[in-house]
Length: 207
Length: 207
Image (cartoon, rainbow over all chains, first blue to last red):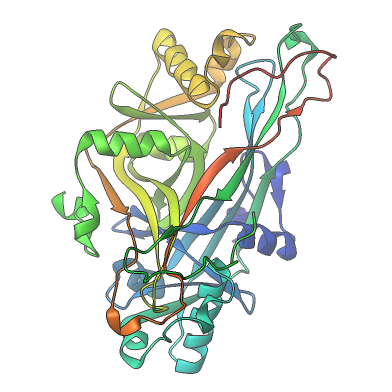
């Protein structure tokens, strides 16, 4: 399987350190799950969380892509856009990014305690502390939800960071070159119209 | 092909209006291209631009995924995260998003004038006006670059927006429910260390 994990293009951007891979995954809020059927690819974006050195996704027990991911190895990818790289030539323009590509087959978590623990980790990853504040998941909801875990063994990370490639031939006085970082921020919370007056916005997110 | 374009899950979130699809694509900076080989899926995140009602990607003429996308129909997906949806129960938590899924085979643009025009649109999409400021693309660079165009005919858009689903049974006094919008911002530009003094930061981006 080695050839899959070593990118053929720009292999110098590849990082195989499991800790760095996990860091890049934790920094990405969503992933794209791709599976093949009749030698055609289908992709679905979804949320995920990490726990016990595994990547977990969940959804309806009727979801096609979860059922496929349980049967066959799928490709899970993440992409974090870190900035635009403005060089002296059009050709050298680039993007700073962190991207993980993972090949794995999903293992269904059927144990209710373990399943609930993953869903708690998942919820709290997006909204720290939320799980303990809301109405807990009930038996029926748990039954309707499939949770799949994916081993990170066949994961690889590709990173570009730093300034643009510099070619003195492309130097032009007055032309700005450098990096424009990209940032994800939270906007002003929009209260639920069904929220009955006076509930202060909780302090989940500090930008 | 109809069954591919009508999602089996939550079909009420599907939108087939071509203008809305293009709007969602324009709002997404990157896409994930997925192809199947030996009935296994492989995904690659990449930039893209729209022109003449087509989606264009580019890369090295040696790039595996471009060569695959030229031979077979691939799945191109975009995902725009618009906000976290905080409901009264863990189960009803959701995400506001716009996601396009497109099935198409790439058509290579070999005409040099057309190819250059696409690369200009691409560059200016990320950095408005940049193309005319930098050293233009040369013959060798153009030859080393493959540009593929994809028809938008088999594209579909899925959207969730608005407040959380409200179930009075899950109402808890003092629990905040609503939407936390997600915003993409540009950070403080980082000048190229090779930039010789006094080049003011251009006014490309207004947050």
